[in-house]
Image (cartoon, rainbow, N blue to C red; front, side):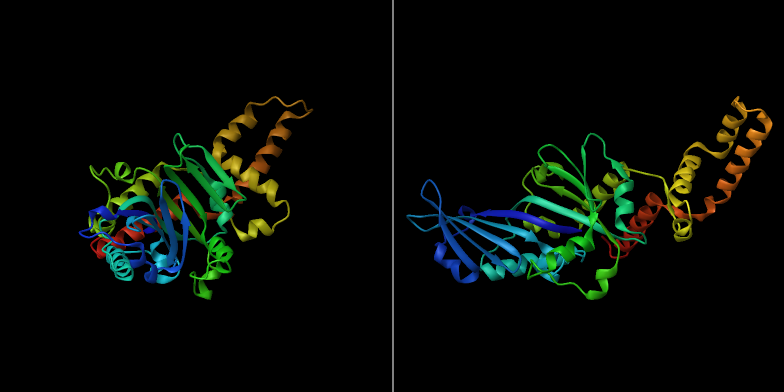
Length: 329
């Protein structure tokens, strides 16, 4: 569930202070810059994880170390994988070993966590069906993603085309690798992102530490947050059109008519037809003609895909919850 994190460690918590030269051999492509107030910055990477070191220029002693990046990308070269508490502990141990500093006490200030839905329909159909979340404005980007966020972006809920995002980054990110067989799948990514006040969001009295992310109880809490948040997202109840309906002549007109029939109901539309006084010579013939059209339209309703979007995604939530239960998460 856990994807991107940002965490910092103030080195005054360490038993001995470290010179910046201690970290230089451990960081890939290190670059130093001079900031204000006699502070310097050393920036580099450990695999895909960005490492930023703040240090005093005069003494060259390190003041703070900050890590930013995707945990599953670090471990598996892509973030389609789902990280277990054991995976997070492996990440902490590996990063600590690479820097030769125990990073388990680093304070988490940014946490992205989410799930992948393997779906049968093109992702834009799901994006179009996601309507709103209480009190959060919605932004849709080219039918590829829908995002609902607070003004400060301290909390963000997003759904997006994961495979499209992966393909767009393959050539840019040397750390990202994914099996080719997965590039043809339809994967809807659902994420909740906390970019500020992670401890408040998770109801921690003190700071959330990197070591806390390896806790089984925290993973249960994150899953419950995902489920509760998903339940509050308004998703259209419309059903998917089948391939046969799409291929038929007059598809758009028929599909929109079926949507109206779905919302209004067959009986109500019949009553509306019966109650209208049409300006025609033979009123009964007009009503009979309209009812015949309605009946023909209703007969096509079985051409709609059997499960709506909400049901399809909820079924995957239930399956994942069962799997987590088997693994005692």
